[in-house]
Length: 131
Image (cartoon, rainbow, N blue to C red; front, side):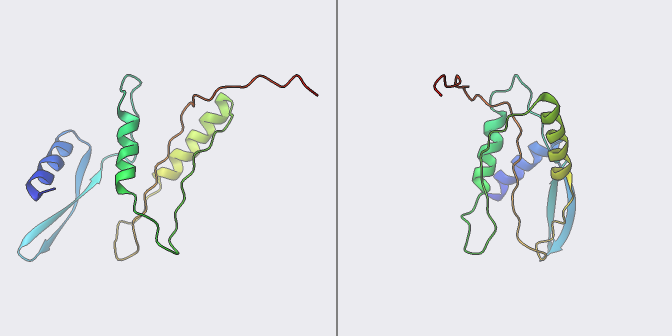
């Protein structure tokens, strides 16, 4: 995107309260601005049809092919949980995702983590009647 187009979108995000100015730095007579999310997570309202797709497309847009020796893992798993177990897992995932990590590029490379716990539409098969 062009800088003016990027600036417009960042301004929209700031006005919506989704990002905040986190750091500025003087560079070659200009000022670089760094923004951070106001919240580390989003709760998608049940009436919104495009929320999950937006997050998945955003993650896919950031994904770079793993180079040899780089950490990379993607998996889709189905877990059969009671309501209590699902809430306990949700709490653990929230705590893990909320952990703060430095954003210093001199420290390492950025890695993305998309975490979603959702009710899955997986059909149940009837039990086999044969021995």
